[in-house]
Amino acid sequence: MHIPDGFLSTNTWVATWVFSAGGLGFCIKKTKEILKDKMVPLMGVMSAFIFAAQMLNFPVIGGTSGHLLGGVLAAALLGPWAGAIVIACVLAVQCLIFQDGGLTALGANIFNMSIIGTIGGYFVYRLIAKAVGGDKGVMAGVAIAAWLSVVIASSACAIELALSGTSPLQVALPAMAGVHALIGIGEAIISCLVIGFVIKARPDLVYNYEEE
Amino acid sequence: MRKKDIVLGLLAALFLAFVLSPFASPWPDGLERVAEDKGFLEKGEVEPALASPMPDYAWPGIKSERMATSMAGVVGTLMVFGAGYGIAALLKKNEEH
Image 1 (tube, each protein chain N blue to C red):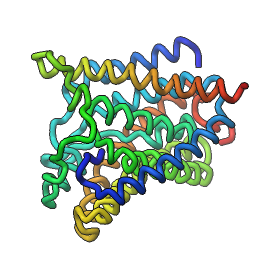
Image 2 (image 1 turned 180 degrees about the vertical axis):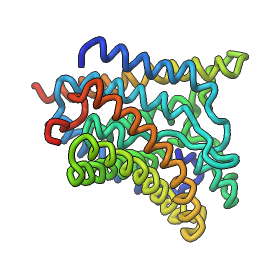
Image 3 (image 1 turned 135 degrees about the horizontal axis):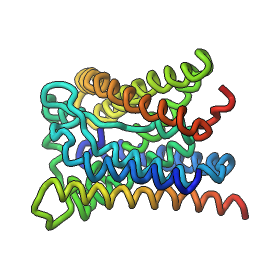
């Protein structure tokens, strides 16, 4: 759901740029406080992995595809603040180098997928992980939060399209949330596969795993 | 994270980017589909605010479409690896001073 240039009105893209810049500034401050040595290379590896995985569009229904967003995946390993920075970093490279998402719309894309999708998704994940407990809780939390993060991010995108006068909310919101409810299933499956592997192979890389 | 894990993680990402990306579904994604169905796709057909060197993940000048995608994927993967690692190292360094 990378918004291209032209979809958003000036008011909307400027406002979302401001929100995203503020949000990322906060993420940088928080990340500095909690950044452990082992997380430094992990931020590079997660950026690379999510970028590559985002290239792999999978078909959802006739003539429509989706791809991983990766926000909850990044946040489950790096926490919400460093996770959001990783997703913003991927979005910035996609926009600047590959014209995937417009430069004016980059603020909105970061707002939807990094600020709302990743940070919001993380807190949903934690809530469920704590309530259920154990590895089962982690997996259930990742699955539900991954699905929800895609649906919520796409809904935010629909609201921005409506605010821009591009498509009325009663049209854009059900259409965006509907198709992304399907794409979100792919997000949940991929996120669970990766986190399931990491829990088996290197549980110490899961953020706050020892607390579970 | 040990060196071995970093290399393995990066290799996994490069495998996705180089080997699998040419086989990704070419169908429009969720937003493009909605834009097409709801009739606002043409709004995005404006001159981009910034001309990118590799639009649509295609390395320029490679005839084979698959190879062009693979090469763009590898270069992009290495770039974001460097960017993510670099930002993290910078934040870590700033904190220690």
